[in-house]
Every structure is written in C-alpha cells, then in structure tokens.
Length: 197
Image (cartoon, rainbow, N blue to C red):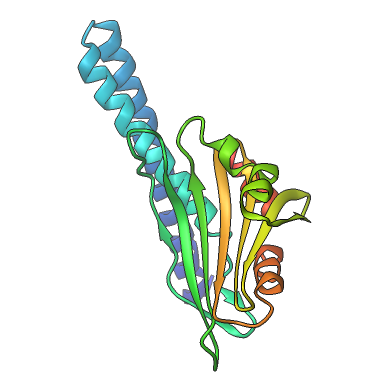
C-alpha cells in the first residue's frame, strides 16, 4: 500500500471514529437522563435529555445545511449558518445561506425555519395567498407560494413539513420569482422533507 493510500485510510478511520464517538455521546446523554429519572432526580434528568435533544437538533441542522446549494450559476454563496437552538415557543432558524449576484446588485437569502407550535397554519401556502396575494407553485412536489413585491423583489415560501418553512427571498434583481424558483430547484427538496419528518 502506498503512502497516499495509508493517509486516506487513516483519515477515513478517524472520521468514522469521530462520528461513532459523537453518536455515543448522544446515547450516553439520553441513558444518563433515563438513569436520573429512574432515581427520581427529575430536574437533572430533564437537563440531560434537553442537552441530548440540542445535540440532535444540531446534527439535523448540519445535515439540512449540506443540502443548501453552495454553487448556483451566476451567484456567489456566503458560508452556510446552522443552529440547533430554538426559542421557548419552539421556533428558530435551522439553516440559512446568503448569495450575491455576480456582476450585479441581486441578493438571495435561503432560510429553513422551525415555526413555533401552532404557527404552521399561518404559513400554509393557501393562507399566504389569501393574506399576501401570492400565486401558488408546486416545486419538486412541494406546495408553496410566491409573493412578488414590485419588479425586483420576491419571496417564495414552501412547507416541507408541519411546523417548518423553507423561505427564499430575492432582492434587487430582474424576474425575482423565476430566480426564487431556480434556487428552490437547485435543492434536494425530498431529502429536506425526509430530514424534517
């Protein structure tokens, strides 16, 4: 085996060990919470389980962030942002990425958000159409609404899962609705749905 192959084997082994250790950390955290619960230490058990849930949400956010495209022709992407945190009501941004138009003023912001409990109805595509005058769209089998604001701004809202939205906001560019649909089409929407359910 040549030197390059040995280095690759060592790197792959290290990644597998790191992934296994991380998965074991979460399992250990949950098991510690169960043990504390069985001992009647409810507050400590809740803290352990909450911590494990935070770790799982972060892993989910990172998996979803990997599906937000890094390259879209004619646009330069900024670094993707993730968060496993959520507010008291359960809302929060899971993953987001901004883009700037090459040689132009256009901007695009993609956000995948967890809504607070009961907020999913407000972001239902049919409700958004009634409130904002948007038009219905079907992208990759996912229902949504595009709301155009003038000739250079648009917002596309898709509902990949209950209590979640995927929002694409386009600013300062021609045909903003088409641009929003192009960005949505560049994403693996089926995989995002799978990760959110």
